[in-house]
Length: 311
Image 1 (cartoon, helix red, strand yellow):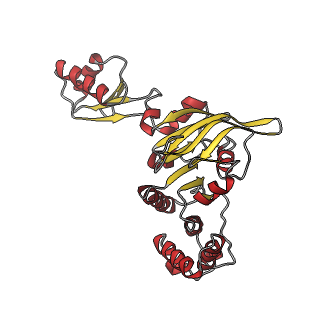
Image 2: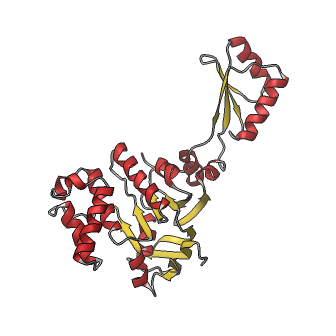
Image 3: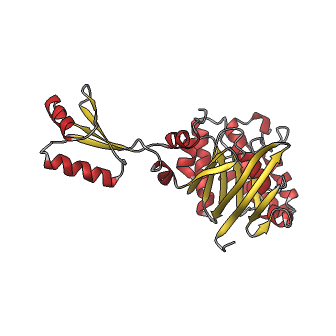
């Protein structure tokens, strides 16, 4: 395991009875980055998180977090990680401050240090005004922020976020994204599981697409998008006559006479754009406007797995 690797998994397998949920997972997550596991319900995302967090034992394979084996060195792993699961750990009968101080006690912080750290985290996650209210009165976004604040009490080096924004409104989701970016900027490593394609696109340095118990593709968002067809350059012309002439210049174009646009199939990247412009220039075609279109992660997931992630 390299010095710069926070999570290293090789040949991970896990079954429930006769059903094999994980069929040989390999992944490596560098320190200070976000790795997103993308997949629908039942793909095995939560099982991976549970094994990494020492809550489940693997049937086979090697799993290390910060160099520590999750089975043989479970105590060392637990001391270095934080987990925010799909089910909130917040106690609704306690206030925000009481929830935080309970976590501080569990981490064996002395009273003064624990109180100071709790107050700082509540302020950092914009919960100071609600700190003395029962958590049962919090909105979904506030409960998620409190849950994350409780995770941060132990100052973890690696955080597992298992579908952390499920059920949140767009504003709360973006607020949580901002917190994730801040943590990563401070050197924290985050493994994120999500069904939200936009979330993976926005946050992840690398994305693993999970299907059938295996990671069927891995890379940056842009690398994954380039693996599927559908990229094109959209040209807009000033007149119908120019559009008609352009349709004779480019092979297999898709014209929209109403909007005076022409879609030229290609990679949807700079190379494709340069080729289109060179061809238009040689033909003397005046282009009023153009845009590049590349496949999104919806297209990637559909192409790789044959199914769509539910909205």
